[in-house]
Amino acid sequence: MTAHVRSTNLALPKPGPGRAGYRTGIDKRPADRVEVFAPGPHHGDGPGVVGDHVGNTQHHGGEHKAVYAFSREELDRWEVELQRGLSDGTFGENLTTEGIDLESLLINQRLRVGEDVVLEVSVPRTPCATFTAHLGERGWVRRFTDRGRCGAYFRVVAPGVVRAGDPVELLEPPDHDVDMLTAFAAAMGDDDAAARVVAARCLPAVHHEKLARRLGTRV
Image (cartoon, rainbow, N blue to C red; front, side, top):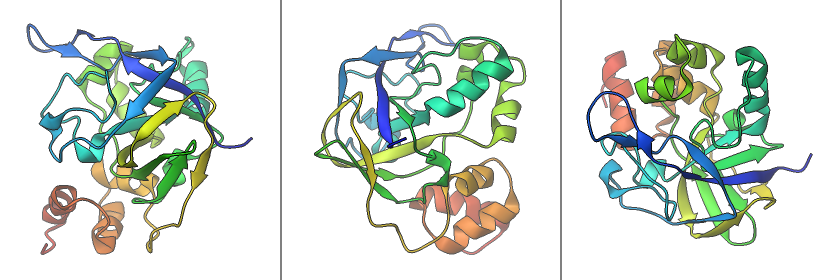
């Protein structure tokens, strides 16, 4: 199967857990297309998808979390385990992909999507209480972490419009071997994985320094 975008998805804001007035954007629904751009560097600068919604501006949005992708193959696997249907966008992804192993992509790998858009693999997703509440599955953070397949956040290098069916092409790879699977394991507490990530110095400074401090490594 040729790697491609199966579905483009935008948030349907809904009340989130934890505090009054908070509306989460994790519940995304298929849209005809999405327009992606490079937001500012900070989480509070919003998402990199026009018309999308970020509820938790302390931990989502900004340059390194501009666009989130998750594979249809993983959604299909979770449908079997959870014994329920999971439509495109259910895991909060802007892009539902097919034919590409997102977790095997190297950190900072660039991809061309369609004719004009270029995305760059950035940081792993961290599962949270909002994700758990959205799915309504007990122990969800642990189950998702144990599976290790977190999808991928992207930066937007070249903005434009993404449509369902657009092909995805890998461009020149970076000069290290740290993939998203390793970066996610590192973020979720695996010190061996963290040591590999820190040695490669492939993450944005704030993420690198967090792992380095955890390991007691001099930044």
